[in-house]
Image (cartoon, rainbow, N blue to C red; front, side, top):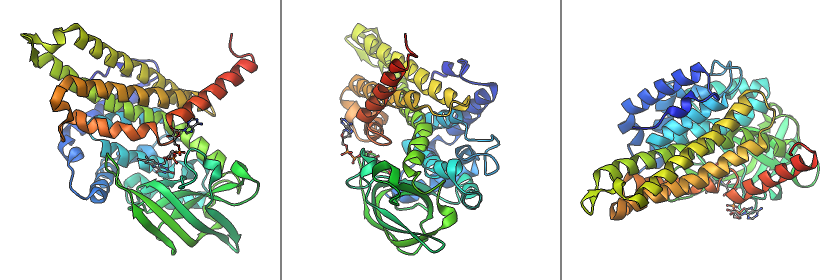
Length: 394
Ligand SMILES: Cc1cc2nc3c(=O)[nH]c(=O)nc-3n(C[C@H](O)[C@H](O)[C@H](O)COP(=O)(O)OP(=O)(O)OC[C@H]3O[C@@H](n4cnc5c(N)ncnc54)[C@H](O)[C@@H]3O)c2cc1C
């Protein structure tokens, strides 16, 4: 039985509690459909986006007037959704998360025309979204980006290649970042809303990873985007990328927490029913130590994740430090928790198809994308040093 005591913490309001109960019931009723896999991950993902759209769950990924009833995206609701979906099926969490990541910058910084054109369709699942920041030589080092945006009459021409793009093979809409050259490095990047039906766009390589999901290298050959598809002002792309990631990093921690809670429940069920040396495994003190670490890790992760989400929802303009702590701690801890669960299952833990085996593969990439763990440590250290120097710590 999943532990939901966290929902009584003061980070939440009653509508969150009602939403979690409703979502949990919906996920339990649709568990088989959420977990169904075919050999075509693109088709599976499209199906999940449609399913989540029809259920109204995707509405939470976009701001008011375009889907959700709240004025802006509620980060606690995003986190509750990701945690709950990840508990059931990694691909369902992915399908939801990408609608938020792919459209988040458009919601925050897009023109009214771009918001009205795309957000309602993202909210219903009619359009599948993606976020195209990384390049072969610009992953952690975003400012090394080479793709270009050149100003022309009425808009911009995009040229270059992006890689590791989640939903790349199936996205209808991308948030794309390109070097527009107002200044060197991070200050010369712009962001655009980009419909993939645009002439000159292509998928050049499909990437197969340990926990399959739609992933590709994509190419832009002289693609035209109109002026109203520029997000904010030219040269603001790096700031836009970081503000979007700030908002969404706690949700990566929430997904990790969902995986970890599932691994914990699977391990609890195993340890209390499997007999070793004439008694349930759970009677062995070393098993108890493993279960204790798992429970402790889950609560500590939840505190960091929901602290960050609450701070954002309460109006803190940037949550860079809180978001980095939540992502770093929750993803690293979930990895350890899932590894412990695999160990408690013994040989059965590494058999293909066992839930803990699947979780073991699914958690890994979360420690790399949206800023690897080392990047989060750098962010936290910079913020802590700045706080110390400005005298806000004792
Ligand atoms: C499954 C998956 C999905 C992804 N989806 C998307 C997507 O939708 N859109 C998108 O734009 N990108 C996406 N990415 C790309 C992802 O954001 C990058 O892989 C990530 O930023 C790391 O970049 P890199 O792979 O080039 O590794 P590198 O930048 O070469 O870094 C390699 C390693 O160096 C270490 N490192 C990094 N910085 C430091 C530092 N300051 N000090 C010490 N060590 C450091 C980290 O361990 C890092 O993993 C995805 C990646 C994966 C694996």
